[in-house]
Length: 115
Image (tube, rainbow, N blue to C red; front, side, top):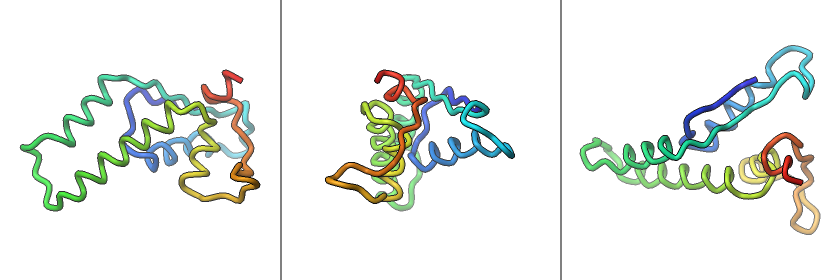
């Protein structure tokens, strides 16, 4: 299992860490999990770090990209949609029927647990 106790700055970080949970050979869904604890303090820390005027950034568009990435991560983690479905929809653009992605839910994230 992988447990995250501070906020991740981008969806790519979430996907990369989520992948660590399933690296065990012959793993089943009972063998691995990925848990995120959303701490408001760590989210605020990331915003302050990104927006710090003393932080030297050669390309201002990079600062804007960091903010967009952070906001997208927030959106996915608080939106009532299965994390697996959200990640695949945003990053992989999966096949769909009538706008509904053809992705099996994980049945383990907070959105799936509330069903």
